[in-house]
Length: 450
Image 1 (cartoon, rainbow, N blue to C red):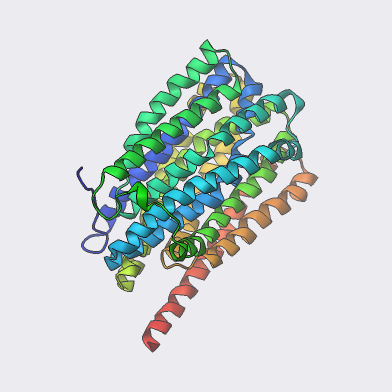
Image 2: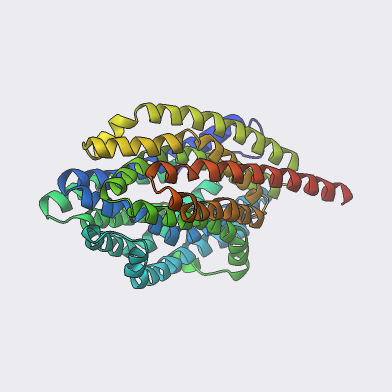
C-alpha cells in the first residue's frame, strides 16, 4: 500500500496547510451533505414534521458525540508529537489504544444515550406531533455510536500523518451508499425518520470497516495488528488530558445549542424545519473553519514535538490568515445561493424566509468563528487545552444560555434568538486572542530562562 505522508516539519507551510485542510473540509462537507440528504428525503417524501424530527436531534447527537471526538483530537496531537520525535513505538501504542478506546467509548455512549433519550427530548420541548419520530430517529442513531467513534479515531490516526485523503475516499463510498439507503428505507420500505437514521448507521459502519482494513494492511508505524490492540494507560492519560478539554469545548457548543434548539422548538414546527434546513447549509462553511483549526493543531503538534517553536508560531499565523479569508469567501457564496439551497429541503416559502434569517446571522459572522478555531487549535497543538475550553465555556455557553433566558424571553422572536450567535462569537474570539498572546509570551519567557 502506498504510504501518504505530508512533511510538516520542513519547507513551505501555506500550501501544506491547504493540502491538509481542504480534503478534511471536503470530508466534513460531504458528510454533512449526506446528512442533509436525510433531511431532504424525509422533507420531500414524509413531510415537515419528519424533517423537524431529524433536525431536532442535531444538538443532542453533538452533545453525546463531541466529548469522545475531542479525545480523538487528543489522539491526533499525541501521535503527531511522537511523529515529530520519530518515536515509532509511541505511535504504535497510541494507534492501538485509540482503536480499542473508540469501541469501548461508543458502546458506553450508546447505552447511556438509549436510557436518557426520552428525557432529553422531553426537556427540549419537542412538540407532540414530532416527538415520536424524533425519538425513533435518536434511538436508531445511538446504535451506531461504536462505529461512528471508530471512524473518527481512525481518521485522526491518518490525519496525524498528514493523510486527509484516505478518510475522504472512504466517506465518499459510504456516503453514496447512504443516499441510496435513505431512498430505499423511506420510499420502498415505508419508514420515516428512523429509516434515514438506519441508513446513516449502516454507512458509518462501512466507512469504519474500510479504514480499519486499510490500517491493518499498513506495515509502517500506524499499521494495526489485532493482537496488539489494548489500552496503554500512559498514552491514554495524555490523550485524555489534551483531548478532553477540546471535547468539553465542543460539548459546550452542543450544550448551548440544545438550549437554543429548545427555544426554537417553542416557536413551532415551521421554525424548527427552517432552522434544520439552514443548519445543514451553513455548517458547510464551518467545516472549512474547523479543517484549518485541525490542521493548525496537527502542524503545531508535530513541530512542537520536534522542538521547533518558531515554526509553530508561523503555522498559527498562516493558518489564521488562510482560515479567515477562505471562510469569508465561502460564506458569501453560500449565502448568495441560500434560497435555492433551502428550496431543496422544502418548497414552503415561509420555511425559506425563516431559513434565510438564520443563514444571514451565521454566515456573515463565520469568519469570527475561524479566529476562535485557530487560537484554540494552536494552543491545543502545544498541549495547552484547558484554558481555551474554559474561555469557550464562559464566552459561548454562558452568553447563549443567558441570552435565551433574558433577551429572548423579553422578545421571543426567531430574529432575536439568532442574534446570539455573532454576539457570543465576537466576545469569545477576543478572549481567545488575548489568551493566545499571553500564552506565547509566557512560553517564550520560560524558554529563555531554560
